[in-house]
Structure formats: C-alpha cells, structure tokens
Length: 220
Image 1 (cartoon, helix red, strand yellow):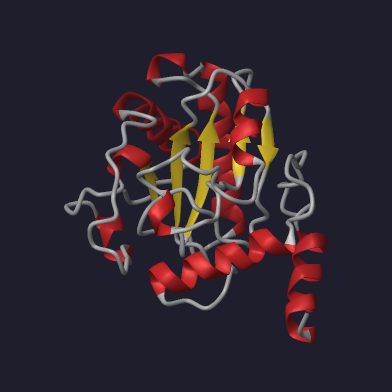
Image 2 (image 1 turned 90 degrees about the vertical axis):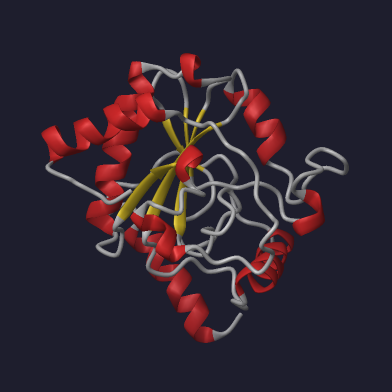
C-alpha cells in the first residue's frame, strides 16, 4: 500500500470515534478482493480509478426488502454479487451491494462499509454518496425507532462532513428535476432500476425532524 494511502486509512481509523460514528461493525476488515472489485466498478461507471469515497456530497436512504438483520447480512456480506441473484445489476459489475450503515427495526445503528470507501447502492451516485439501509420488507415495515435513528445518523454525518449538501430517498434518485441530480454520473445510460424505498412519507418525516430538531436543511 502506498505510504500516503496508509496514512489516510490510519487517520480515519483514529478519527471516527471522535466524530461519534464508532458503531458496531458488521463487515469487519474489508477484503482486498472487495476493494479491487469496488475500484473496478468505480473506474467502469465513473471513470474514477479508486475505491475511495472523498468529500461525500449526499446521503441516500434505503430499505433492504428483508425481514431481519441475519437475512440482510446473508445478502450483503459476500464480496461479489451471487451468481444469478440480481440480473438487473450483475451485467454492470461484480462487486456486491454495499452501504455504509444498517439501521435495525429497534433503532440500532451498525456500520458496514467504512466511510472512506465507496459503496454500491445508488446507480449514478456511488462516487459521492453515503448509503443508509433500514431493515424493512416495505415502507409499512419501517419503524419510529428507525426514523429517529436515521435523523441522529444524518445529523452526525453532516457534522462530520461539511461537504454533504443533499439528502434523498432511493426512490428519488432518478428525478432529474431535483437539485441532487447535478451530481449524476454514469457511463452506462441505460443502467437504471425503478426504486420505491424508503417512500415519500418516511423522507418527509425525516426532513421534518432534521429541520425542527437539528436545524438541518439539506437539498433533495
């Protein structure tokens, strides 16, 4: 590993507890294979020859379409997309779906990918977006505890990264009329999927909490 990159990693490992983001980690140490697959994906889709997430500008909220944490981890832990599991995604890269945080139904927040690393969670925006997944089968399965945890986490991320300007729900990602779309970057124009998570109601309530409790107003 180049010396400057090693210093960068050590800096983040040292600083994360100071930022209040030292949540229990579910993935553990990222494998070299996952790093290489992420770099491959970033280069192919964004022309960026790196797996690093530098100065993130947006946060994307998701839900998992799974019932619980064990079933979620069964999907997320492998480095590669399982063969035949996601035919709408697999032609466009081998790296598995990956987000930075998972929020369980009772509001527990877990780290997954480190914040210095790009994930694969939102087409066209992975080069600049932090991803938060809520464990839920659908929008009706989302809980009040998850809503509160999301607000807390977004607040901490905004305090940590002054570069963050945008907050969207995954269902909003291809809305070309919203301000965040200025960040869209994708070398495969037909690579897109229709998304419904987490839904307008969850995002409306999340934005209300952020505005009224934390005085945070992010563009969508």
